[in-house]
Image 1 (cartoon, rainbow, N blue to C red):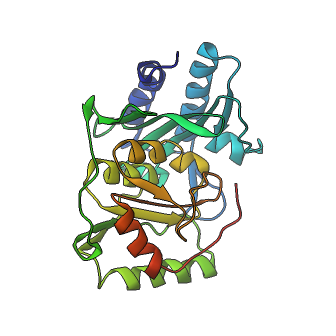
Image 2 (image 1 turned 45 degrees about the vertical axis):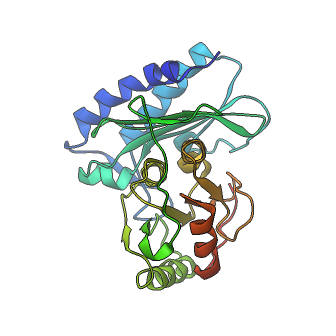
Length: 268
């Protein structure tokens, strides 16, 4: 039996690493472009998490952001698979901005079973298990009951790509949303944006160009909190599509689908 407590124990060493380094000088490298960053901490935390989990579950598979960036194929099968983002919000981490999360999910038969999003700086521990609800620091959470887009707060990101086509869509959607919603907020972390929808702090969030490790835990936490996760064009959610829309209600999701511009990045 895999428990959230087991994952939490595996993730605890991450807390010390992040606290020690978030306001210290870092070794920073570029990945796809000058705003797609990686630090030695990203790499060390991923190795630590995978090592700890492998020791407990030697037959399980792994998908990790930094191992994928290093050339390991991103492949989701029916086998139990841990999908890990060691530092979601690396740009925030580099600048010492405290919205930094570890995202860990267990998928079995291509379905999310366990999801954890942990911000060790703010000590926000979001968790969910399929069919058992969503929690923040052990207490049940639920999405907002809002059904009107005009009264909604929307999580929004510009992402880590400066692709011209994508930026046109991102800026276009900002122009579309701003006049018709209560407000737009950016945490700088996809995982934390999804957690905010689950908590009821925001009403919806969508993004293009993210990866499986950004959303594999958040999708379960949102749905277990009573929300919905779909493709931004209105179809079923696909964790490898690099596209998602989560919302507190199907009504809010449908209203967004009708007005936002679409962008289709290459799949994971």
